[in-house]
Length: 466
Image 1 (tube, rainbow, N blue to C red):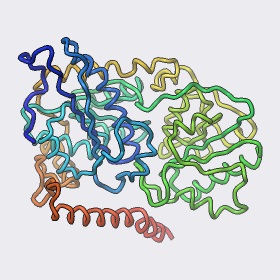
Image 2 (image 1 turned 180 degrees about the horizontal axis):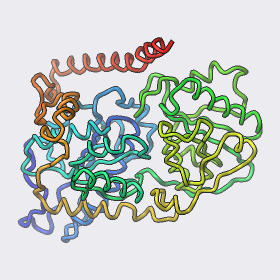
Image 3 (image 1 turned 60 degrees about the horizontal axis):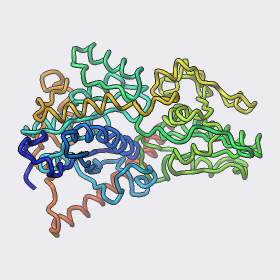
Image 4 (image 1 turned 90 degrees about the vertical axis):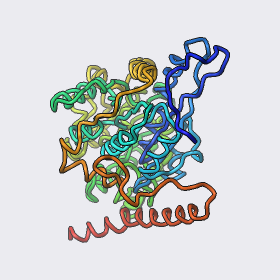
């Protein structure tokens, strides 16, 4: 397919002729980032399509392509299905390498690209896209899946160079601009929005229902002792309140990867808990929104699920049992009014969120969520209307970060100038036996790699701690 040469409106087109589709690509590297990227694409382009279609030819249709960056956290079909409704059928999402993605952008002529990746992945794709030297390049959007509580400067500077860097709240937007301006980088890309997956009906207590949900995190806390402690307290809470339904909401099943590595799954810890599990305690999976539909109290250490819960005005508690510490991420909730302990929750305490803190965190519990993406949509529409955009210009270059950038690019098989390294895989030719064999070998290799990362590496690390 030849590359498209223009994103701008064609003045020669007759009013009766249908508008070409607005083509969007979402590249994600994990289940949660896929959810964020796909929903962000939908929220950004709905209004942009209408703005672009105000010349009498109707609303411009939108086509969203789902692409998964191959790696340790590439989601399984089950994980994609469990993410919930994002407007893209799971079976139409395909895996690509970084080089294959760049070739796809070159050949398909997308109007918008959403990079739902870890910071290093975003930086590599920015340099790779810049090295394509496209006559008409896409609008590039990136951002964060949830609470930004660690590696703020590192993560932000790795995302610098995108046309739009989304901030999930006014609080984050201010922090993002301060980092960029502090190093002398252009901060105009920072755009305040909100988490794209907030929603659901406001909390309404139901007579006879009393459900406590603990939102587990794959890597917080990290140690066996801390995770066992939290599990034990949750089970004890269930025993103290036998008429209360107590749910442990899990992100993945053993053997699956999420955004973060889970070396000590709660499922396995629960099997070894002395005394077994009470009948009112259950482990649950599924879409978080569906679990929140029946939640009367959400408890977590620092999960983004807290923001989803607060958006719906569900009573929410952030635990202090293991301390209020940066590695746990619960320091983000200082001033929220949500910090408490299992002892207090066991006694019936329910935190009340601080209204000023809520206003700055983008949870939009006041009903303002409907306009949270207006500024971002307008910016996308404005960039699309420009047609030819200036070259991408990340803060990190071979001149500004010669000891850092080449390693980041090399992990994605890119040279320091963003071009593919010799031997980097080219796109497969459909229908060719050689391509099918190559795909089979790659899948086997990826399975072995995942097994090594999740099963073998943790054992080696634990042995080293003995």
